[in-house]
Image (tube, rainbow, N blue to C red; front, side):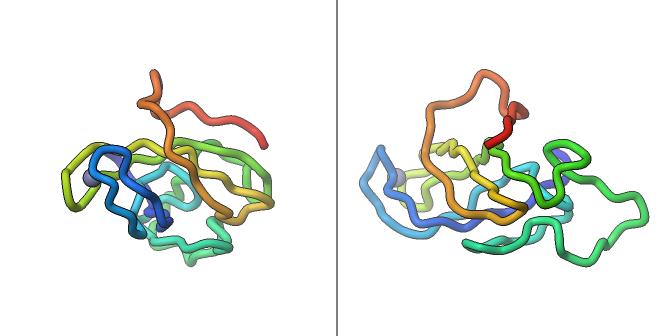
Length: 109
Ligand SMILES: [Zn+2]
């Protein structure tokens, strides 16, 4: 897996029922293993690399879009997929979804 960021959000595991804030890996923002909480601007961190990598597509800074995220339950190890929503460049939330056919899919909001 290449570079990604982590998105923290409270979810309830559909497998075991554990409810807690989990971390989901997503190709969103300036990709350099940053952690984002609700409301954080996903593009405003200081670039750590000369060659910037931005996901899920160049030119999305300040825009509204969704992309997939991957996490797992710390209690039962169930793999969890999420749709991560970004509005006007800020992480606003995520919802659990079924495993996507293509984890690199994304779209405008
Ligand atoms: Zn679980």
